[in-house]
Image (cartoon, rainbow, N blue to C red; front, top):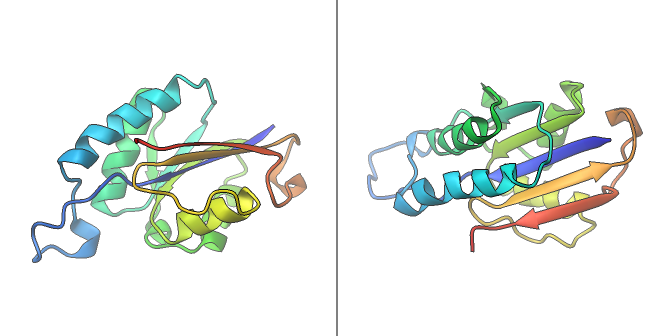
Length: 155
């Protein structure tokens, strides 16, 4: 089975206009939601072999919550910062691991979730998770949409 989990970073803090977009941290809601969603995801028993995250502070912080909960080291990939749906999927396929979790940004995360769910997931709010599965043994055998999927949000 092939599994891809998409996580949109938790809510970010816009209070300091002098920070670059890349350097914005999580706000209080984001700091609260990331570990809650990570714990909830870990309780689903979905295996994750590798976690990749955008290098943006808000994404890295979110990814670290999931990595801690799952016992998986977070790998940073600067190409995931504002990546398109195509780039996100290409990252998962390229690692040749059967279960990947990606933490990144909109619009790419929502666009990919939309494609993989056959249009049923129309938006990934902050800290949402969407897991897609295929009943095959390699990424080369996967098709769009995914065979099945699940979706969760902090609200």
